[in-house]
Image: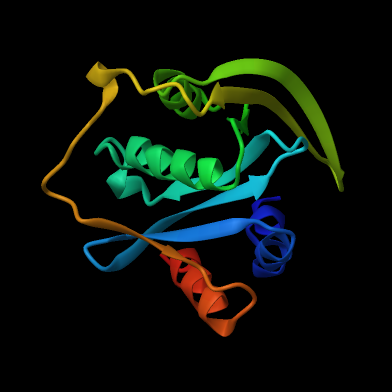
Length: 165
């Protein structure tokens, strides 16, 4: 199932339809990625992907990446961001709630071939500031977001580097 969601071909198709993908580099090393897609409505953006290498979890990079995503979504002219996460992904749901997201819907998606996903849809207005107590500012990590070039070998190479880690 995961190879379908993260396949280079799928990512390139999402980029062709207006999606923006960003490689997260930590100290110059590709360490994760995120994607913001146009939503179902003109006022919403969709956080399609937000992945970090497991050894980077718990260091505030996820919350920092969300702040970056909010800015990208606002730049698309939207006022709300939505995402979906599996109903058993308690760790992600806790992080999203901490960032101001609320569950607004439960959806079941049949992908065929025996793959069915039970997900919650979470939403957050972009004008909502993150709770000050939840912000995590680090000085030990230098993170950079690099937009993946649309439809080029460079994008394929960057995602391939992450797949092998």
